[in-house]
Structure formats: structure tokens, C-alpha cells
Image (cartoon, rainbow, N blue to C red; front, side, top):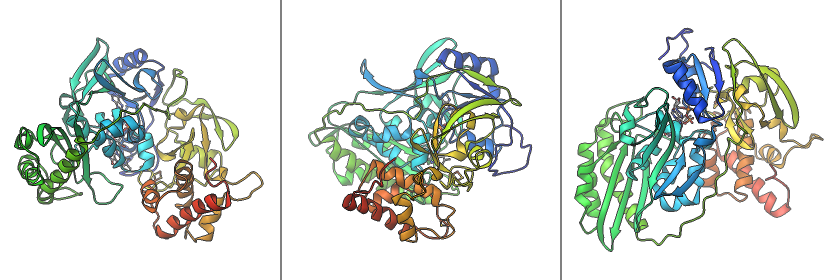
Length: 490
Ligand SMILES: Cc1cc2nc3c(=O)[nH]c(=O)nc-3n(C[C@H](O)[C@H](O)[C@H](O)COP(=O)(O)OP(=O)(O)OC[C@H]3O[C@@H](n4cnc5c(N)ncnc54)[C@H](O)[C@@H]3O)c2cc1C
Ligand code: FES
Ligand code: FES
């Protein structure tokens, strides 16, 4: 932990200066970690690290951006395990058909994540190494008996997740080690799983979460795992509750009995999100629901689906260093215009867009990933520009709300729909809402109201309310279907 130098608890700015290192290979990254030791932090999606640095909870002397390491990317199934690269994003996991079919609890955990933008930016490696007891992927990964592959100066080692997560924010990585992949055993036939999370609002961390995995033989439970988030110093497995089920004939009463046992063995506390009492009370019915879902799924016949993986991190790896007081020349294509800019390591993409390129459409709201006002597209994906280092965007294509209108100034049909439906009042959230809604319509041309609300769950509006925004998106989608306009053009 670094000392607070500016006495600011929630700054929009990244005041702290640091050296920026971008290795191109795993070997190079391990060498840098050995060189800098505890002075270094690794940067993957940055959704934890940049928030900690802005809030002065961490002040690393150097930041090692691992986002381009080819060794940490991709998913494959071979040698009896399904391997997920540490840089796989939460959104890739949520949408991969193979994860949805075979490791359903993991796909559901990823779907429950904070916001669409955080799902697009955050990685599974970052979620594990953040070591939060409220992490959404960890309960599901533990329930599937996953193991982690760590690469370091002395080679590779594989260890169970529980051995990496030592306490809140504490990981058992040795000096120079990087998490390269997560390995899930190939699921046995008749396995079903489910993940359920209770939170204060849709885009929030869990008050309590549970992942359930069941293997069934006809009406009997052959094997079972129950793992809980947000109810202890780390994610907790409840073997006592699993024993209630194993070998027995399944029914909803038995599932509730297992939940009651779990509610006694979890270790919840009172905090800002919930009380220990509530967490214990709700653990039993939540467990029952998760087990019943997992049980049903275990009885379904599933056809394995092929892997389809795209990546936000698709640049050809190039290694470079920028010292804390230095600048690096980046090249970015913004709204179709080629820019070359000298940027410092602690300059944010949002500041560069607003202050250097005078594109003030993207807004500074919270500065910490919570409001979505700063949303822009980076290489075609909506991201939070307040949590992107400008130096890391070298070689990328950026689109801001200014890039939505046609070159002749004609508004995009979605912008027009926002006007027609009075979908704004002060307009502060509107650029972020538009960038997200436009992308939603490209992905789902006829979204339901629930799909619109879920996609936009990370975009906050403090004045208009969401009903008119949802109506505007629906009407634009209808217009595309009926009138053939190009609302979904991206
Ligand atoms: C608004 C908001 C909402 C959020 N909502 C949720 C939520 O609903 N559920 C949830 O679980 N989390 C949530 N998070 C937390 C965060 O988004 C996730 O933990 C995310 O998966 C972190 O991944 P990242 O790639 O962004 O990590 P980074 O911020 O890049 O890194 C996090 C930490 O892990 C280390 N690290 C990263 N990759 C590796 C690696 N391969 N090897 C070793 N160390 C590594 C970094 O050094 C750093 O210490 C939220 C965060 C924000 C800001
Ligand atoms: S300003 Fe970026 S999410 Fe709020
Ligand atoms: S219109 Fe004012 S914040 Fe949404």
C-alpha cells in the first residue's frame, strides 16, 4: 500500500507518477517482475488497479502492462482439462457457448458482473488476483475444482484456487510469478451447475452469492459442490452442506436442508452491503434455488458447442518502457482521424480525448468505473475511458459520441430517437448511453426491455430516469426493422 500524498480519497485524476513497462512476452514480463519486485503492479483490464491508484490505495513505482502477452490468451480443451487464459475477459466467458453449456455457473457469474463495460474490460486473471471475497467468478471456479497455472522464474506450477486466495486482497503469488491460465476439469456426464447472486442493485457486488455443481445418476446425487461468496474473509466452500446431499435422492426439501447447514458454517459480517444476520437468513433459500436449477440442468442432454473467442486485446505485442517523468509517442485513430500524441504514463484516455483533442462528448462522472458517462469504443468495444491509460491505447481505434453523426452532420437514428423521446434532461449521461445503446443494437437488433436495461446497467442517469431512454432504444430498433434505417451501423 502506498502512502496518501494528496489526501484525496476519490480523485478523478491519476496524480501518482509511475514508470510504464509493456513487455511483449511472458519471459520478459517475469524478468521485469523480478527486477521490480513489490514496487511493481501488473495491469490487465485495469478495473481494479486504476481505481485503487486513483483512490491512493496503491502507489506502485512501476506498472507492467501484461495485456498483450500472447501466452495469457485464448481458451482450449486438451489433455482432459478446459484451459482459460488469464487475459480472457468476463464478457468472453459470459458469451462463449461452451462455457454457457458446460460451465453454466461460470457463465452466470460473469453475466452478474457489475456492468457491461466492466465485463468487457475486466479479466478472469484480474478477478482472481484481486482476491476479493465478493468476486463473482471465484465461487463458480472453486465449485468446478479449478486449478491455476502460475509461471515464474523457476518454471510453471499448478495449484488449487484456495491456495492462491489467502485473505481479502491477499494472494499467494511468489516473486516474479504471473497467473497464466485457469484449468477446469472436463465436466463428467450428467453434471449441472448454477450461480445465484443477491446484490443491492443490478450493477453491484454481491451481498451473498452461491455456486452449486451437481452430478446426478437418475434421481440420486453422485457428487456436489457448494461455494459461497461475500460471506467470509475469502470465498468459502461448505463441505458439511454438500454431505447432506451426496448419495441421497434429490428433492427440494433436501436442498433446503443443505442450505440450512450452509447458513451455519458460513462466516458473514456486517458491512455496507448487508448484515451478517440477513446473509445467514438468505443463504438457505438461495442454496435451495441454486441446487434445484443445477439439478434440472444435470438431467438435460447437452451438445458441446464449438469455441468462438474474440479479443479486445488483439494488438501485435511490442515491448517498450516509459519512465515516470517521460512521455511516449502514441498513434490513435479517433473518429477516423489519425493522431500522434506524446503522453505521460499517468495520462488517461479520457483526459487526452477531452483536453488534448477537445472531444468533450465523453464525460468525467465518477472517475472510478461506476457511472458509464465516459464510455467510448476502443477497437470496437465500449470501454470506460476514465480507466484506460492513454499510453496503452497506442495503435488503437477510438470512437466517441462525436463520431456517431454522419460527416454531413446528420444525426445517427439513435441520436434522433433520444431527441424524439426526450431521453435526456441535463444530457450529462447521454454520450455514454448512446455509445452503449448503439453497440447493443449492433449486437442485438431487437432487444427486449430487460436486455436493454441489463446492457445499460452500468450507465447512470441522475435526472431523466430510464423509462424514456429504454423507449428511445426500442423505437430506434423498431425503426430499423420497419423502415430499414441503419441504426445498428457501427
Ligand atoms: C464499477 C466496478 C464494478 C465491478 N463489479 C464487479 C462485480 O460485479 N463482480 C466482481 O467480481 N468484480 C467486480 N469489479 C472488480 C473488477 O472489475 C474485477 O475484479 C475484474 O475482473 C478485475 O480484472 P482486471 O483485468 O480489470 O484487473 P486489474 O485491475 O488489471 O488487476 C487487478 C489485480 O490483479 C493483478 N493481476 C491481474 N492479472 C494478473 C495475472 N495474470 N497474474 C497476476 N496478477 C494479475 C494486478 O496486478 C492487480 O493487482 C468491479 C469493478 C468496478 C470498478
Ligand atoms: S467517469 Fe468513467 S465510469 Fe464514471
Ligand atoms: S440526463 Fe442528466 S444525468 Fe442523465
